[in-house]
Length: 232
Image (cartoon, rainbow, N blue to C red; front, top):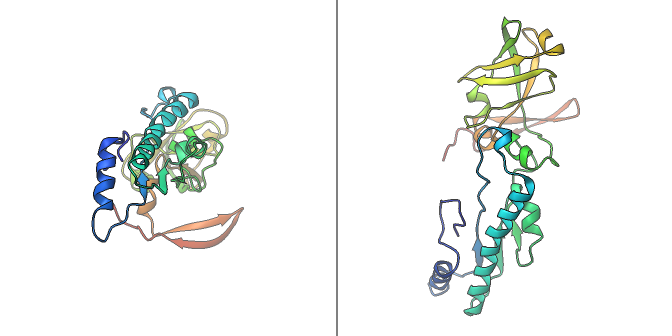
C-alpha cells in the first residue's frame, strides 16, 4: 500500500480491500497479507530543519495505524491477513510496539549512514569511505581525493569523522573540500587519511566492488557487492 511515499501501491482502506479480493480470487495466487513503507520525514540537509523525535514517532504511528485499520477491514470481509509488513530503520521501534504488525522492514541499521544517524543516534555508522588529503590550497582548507563518485550524490554531504575542527563543506565529482576551522585540523597535510560517512549509503554502496571488513584495526576480509554498478 502507498501510505504517503508516493510510489507503488494502492491506498489503504477500500482500494486495498479490492486488491486483496482480486488476488484471492485469481487462479494461482494466494493472498497472504499487506505491506507498506512509511515515508521518511520531510527535511532539508540542514540539521535545524529536521523534525524532532517525538514528532517523527507520532507521524509514524499515525501512518502505521492506517495499515492496521486496513488489516481489520480486510479480515472483516473474510480474508485472513497473516502478514503485515511495515516500518524501517527510522521507525522500527514504533512499528515493533504496535500490536498486529508481524514484520518490521528495518534494513539500514547494521551499517547506517549520516541520514539515519540523525534519526537513530543509538546506532553508529559502520560503513565509511576512506579518503586522503591531496592538497592544502590555503591554511584553512584541504582537498580530499573523494567526491560524489566516492560518497554518492545526494541532497546532503558526507560527514568527516574523527578530525576535530574540520568539516566537509563542498564536494564535486572527484574531490571533497574541508574547512579546517581550528586546532589539530590545521595540521593536516597531503597524504593524511580521513574517514567520510556517506549521507545516504544507498547511493554509495553500489559504486564499489567490495567492502573491506575491519574489526578493530585488523582487516578481516573482503565482502563482494553484488549490486556493483546497478542503479535500477
